[in-house]
Amino acid sequence: TLSSGAATFVCYLHRTSTTRMGITRSSTHKRRSTGGKRKAYRKKRKYELGRPPAMTRLGPNRIHPVRVRGGSIKHRALRLETGNFSWGTEAITRKTRLLAVVYNASNNELVRTNTLVKSAIVQIDATPFRQWYEQHYGVVLGKKSAKELAAEKAAKEAPEAKKTESKKGKKGAKKADAAKKADAPKDTEKDKKKDDASKPSAVATEGSASSDASAQAAKSDKKSDKVLGKLAKRRNGRKVDAAVEDQFVAGRLYACIASRPGQSGRCDGYILEGEELAFYLKKLTAKKKGKTA
Image 1 (cartoon, rainbow, N blue to C red):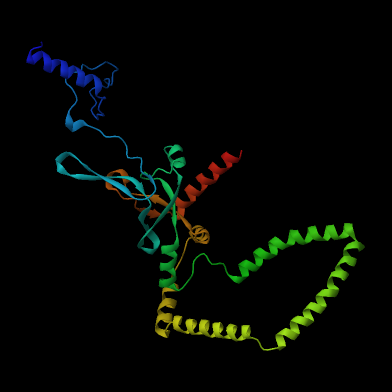
Image 2 (cartoon, one colour):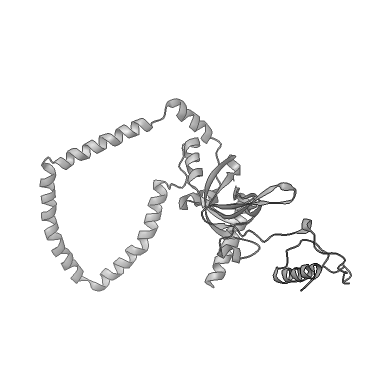
C-alpha cells in the first residue's frame, strides 16, 4: 500500500503524461539575440496562454462565446454567411451575403477553404447596394443601355455572318433549292395566321386585361414632380468608379474584411474602389494567368 503522498505523486505523473502541451505566448523558450540559450527558470503562466485559431469559414452562423482574462467575453465565429459592408464614396453601409473568398495575401490555402480572416478579399452580394442606389438616385446600376446592347449584338453577329456566307458559297445551288421548297408552305401558314388574327378570340381579351393591369401598376409606381426633381438634383454630382459599375452587372462586388471574425464574431468590411481595387484586380488576373499556364 502506498502512502498518501506517494499516491498523489503517482496521480500527478499519470495526469502530466496524458495531458497535451498548452499553447503559450511567452518568449522564455526563445534564444537570445546573440544566439545563446536561455535557462528555463519557471513554468508556463496562465496569463501567457494562447488558444487555437478560429479558422472562420463560410456557412450558416455558428458563434461560440469564450471567457477570457478579466471576465470579458470574446465571440469566436466558426461559421459566418453575412456581414456589414460600407460603400465609402457613397457613405452608406448595408448588411449583405458573403459569396466567396477570392484572394488572401498570406496563404492561398485560406482561399481554397473559404476561410474568413482580416484583410482577406471576398465577393459579396451587390443587391442591397443596387437597391439603395436606385432609390437614392433613380438610376439602375448594372443595366446596359440599348446602344451598348446593340453594339454587343453586332459584334457577335459579324463573325457568324462571315461563317454562314463562306458555307453558302461552298454548297451553292442545293441550299437555294431547299430554301425555295421550305418557303412555299410557310406562306400558307402566314395566311392562316392572318385569318386567325382577324377573328376575335378570348386570348385577345385576356391580353388586353393584362396590359391594363400593367398600365395601372406603372401609374402607381409613378413618382411626383417633387421627388423627380430631388432625384435629378442628386444625380448632378454623382460619380461611380467604372470598375465598380462593371461588377454590378454580375451582381458581385469585391470587398475587404476589416474586422477580426475570430475575436469579434463579425465579418464587416468595405467595398474596394479606386487604386486599391485596381491593385487587387491586377493580382487576380495574374493568378488566373498562372493557373491557365
